[in-house]
Length: 304
Ligand code: GRG
Image 1 (cartoon, rainbow, N blue to C red):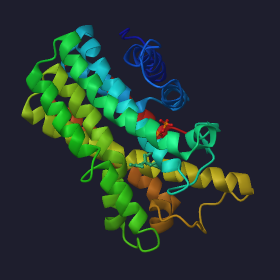
Image 2: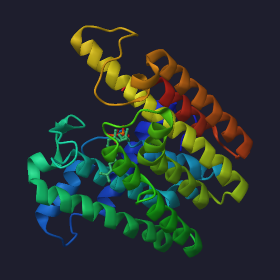
Image 3: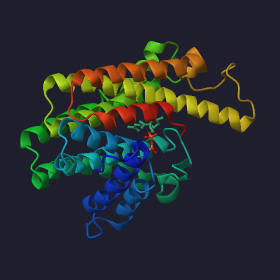
Image 4: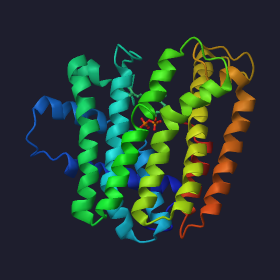
């Protein structure tokens, strides 16, 4: 990809590449019930930031600076977006968060009904694993690397990863009182998919175990920073809506970093985590890490 792109341009370029690749992975000719496919595509095409796919692609390129590494990583980038989208569809259901809007559009169940939304989520989750296997078939990713990616995804998206984080969040809804409990939830609900995205891209690029270890540290830290920044933006947005944009009196129902340690300390934590992440990335000694450094800074400074 063109080296002179700013990080925002890089993210929007990868987003549009991923959107085209998703059309191939779920082709119009795909012989599945039309409404199921419509429901899957509705949420996939609802216009998310495509952050996780960008991390897969940027990590592959960081380890091996050639465009073939990014092409081979594309099916995995699509797979992670399918899993992320499934999690959002299920999270919005009446039995979970009961949300009517997501990404500025009606939620999946509001358009297709609860049953079809559950099925669309299930189908996206399952099809993600199919897409990863395709990276081996079509782009020469070794079967060993593909298998390792499938194994890591099944852990990071499952009971000891994202689903576990969501369950801990649900079970602790009223009872989360410490940063450690909250950190556990964020690490699994949010960071695990981010860490997976980076590790999968890096594995396709041919990273060593030592590099993967530092990339994991980088991902864990930017994942936490991303979630804290998300909670800061939620809070600041809500206060702006209420016309009371203050730094104190943090009053909200949801237990978040701003709720537990205040807005200013939360902002400082985002900066600390981003610095830690960048130090780990430095230690990884990659061939072309500039996109990853750029994404870390972009996430810290983002305002949406
Ligand atoms: C239902 C199994 C299951 C899991 C749900 C993703 C999730 C776990 C819940 C959604 C709520 C939430 C705040 C999750 C934390 C991760 C997060 C900030 C998700 C939003 O990711 P973005 O900002 O979304 O990348 P877009 O829309 O840009 O893709």
